[in-house]
Length: 219
Ligand code: PMT
Image 1: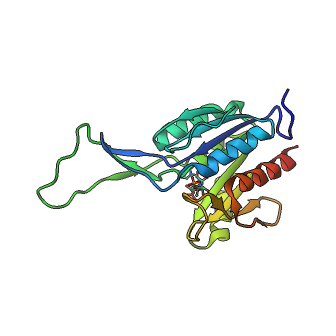
Image 2: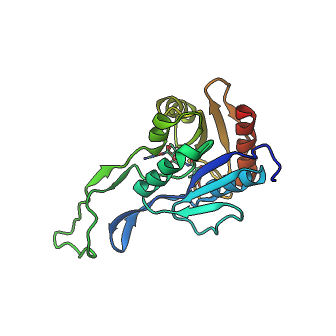
Image 3: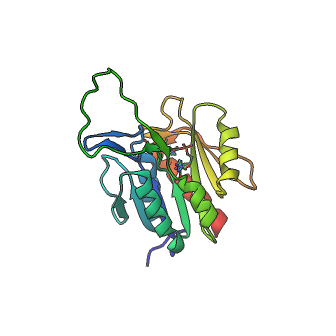
């Protein structure tokens, strides 16, 4: 029997940057390293939770004691998160999801255009956090907000619009914050409490504080 504040809880976490294919060898993605989501998975497991990590691209190795599912695109991630929702107690969207995908990825490698230009048509991907927010019952839903301006205002809007219970906001225009770094500086927003500003610290410490706060509100 595991000990910890999250024992008997099933936590599902997404991490990394989604990959949207252009052709068999090229893709659109983003700068997410997966470090924040993997740190959350580790912190949740430390607290005794049963953890499922749905991981988009990353170079990190699977965390010990965590069921890790590897996916590529936003659509794959949506499928896995929606499938995991009914059996989850806590869901955390730390992945950086591409808002758009190539409407029709080429079956064969694209050749250089004689015109000197290439136009790609993008179509919108599902908003997974909003889907989960619309479908959830008792689950505690946590989203992230990666912003480069108006951090708290935009994060507050996402909290409400996507029906999340908690939003973790990071200002990714700052050094040592967000994409790729080993450290992060976040502000935690919930529906009923004042925003909580955490200091800059390593991602595992941030993750432990987020899991601690979740365990306080759900227990
Ligand atoms: O992976 P690292 O290098 O450690 O970097 C960590 C991080 C910066 C990626 C992480 O801390 C973070 O902020 N993750 C969310 C990135 C993001 O996509 O933020 P957003 O503000 O665009 O999206 C808001 C929320 O909606 C997020 O929870 C996101 O997962 C979710 N979303 C976004 C788009 C979409 N189509 N579906 C979604 O579910």
